[in-house]
Length: 348
Image (cartoon, rainbow, N blue to C red):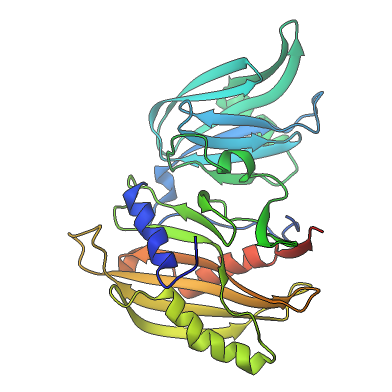
């Protein structure tokens, strides 16, 4: 996908057409969806693999409703709290080679569920174990756990074997930078991979059960700037040419922009964060004449060993009704959480 002036608009179009790394200094407090979302409308499933087992180096994956939604990839000595909008009978399954194990839960909004999860060896070979605990045992095991509970949001049903099944929750995720380098960064907990090719990686969140107007997109995309000798020239690029690459003249009306400095990871020459607000119309939502879009971008420039310049943008965007959007400080904090995990890695 060649970067162009409608890249982010296209991400939202696809959202409506269908529905490492560095350890963080502190956990990200993050609920995906609109700012006016009530978290009590989620069911919460605790997957407890907090005890030692015989397979400490192995993940154990759990899928919801057959192949419709990846749920969690659990490591030994970890607890995962999965928030979902699914209700009523929901099937969980795990599979190691051909050994298939299934568990059905009747989910209700606002309720907590505790599932003991581990791989185990028996006469049939290696199996995944899923066991529903009663509330008393679940809470007792949770209270005894001294680590950080990791939140996952499994609320976008997707069909088929998409890329995110393989790598969205791995410890290290490489993204293409150029023929000799990769970008590494930790995605936000709500992001499911929508598309990935050499110059672009696009994530998305949308759930029509929550809102028909709200959607979130993010990722990283290459830009055309190949030469930049000074920070002044880079700032000028961000304020002029870059803005034109993300606005659709037919559907967007710019209402505000700010530019601020950010930290520079090793190997990055220049970086700036831009906060952009614009009004957006969508032919996909004829009943809604105009939506508001808020986006934050970290635009950065670096040169490789041969002196070739490279520019890219890491971004997070929300589109929806004004009362559905988070304020810019919240969006900036979330994107900085991703940026602080960023690395430029030479793969040659």
